[in-house]
Image (cartoon, helix red, strand yellow):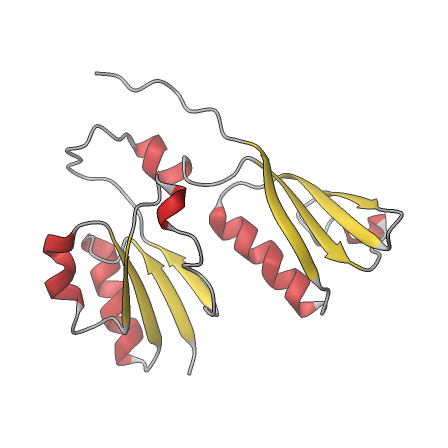
Length: 167
C-alpha cells in the first residue's frame, strides 16, 4: 500500500486531501497541530502526529516510511501571530548540503536542480545550494533514491532569515 504524509491535514484543503487519499486506498499519516481538531481526522487518517511546521523539533521522523509528502499548509484566520511567510515558506531550509556515497560529476547538476556538485576525497559527493522548500528537498531525495545512491547526510547550512512580524 502507498503511504502518504499530509501536512495541514485539518485545514480546509487538507481534510479533503486526506479523505480522498483514504478513499483511493492510501495509508495516510496526518499532521495536526490542534488536539481539538483530532476527532474529525480519526476516521480518515491511519496515523495522526501532533506537531507544527514552524517548530521543527516536533517533526523529527515524521516522514519516515512515507512514499509521498503533500503539503496543504496555509493560513486563514491565524490567532497565534504567525504570518503567511512563517507558515508557507518559513518552515523550509534555504541552503542545504546533501552528502551521498559514490561520485557524481557536474553533468548531474541540471538534474539536481542546479545544485553545486563537489566530489570529496572519501569517495562521496556533496550536493549544495538553495532548496526552495521541503517539497523541493523531498524531490531531490527521491532522485538520490532513484539513482540508488546511499544517502549519508542532509544538513541545513544557512537558515532562512525571517522577517520581523508586524503587530
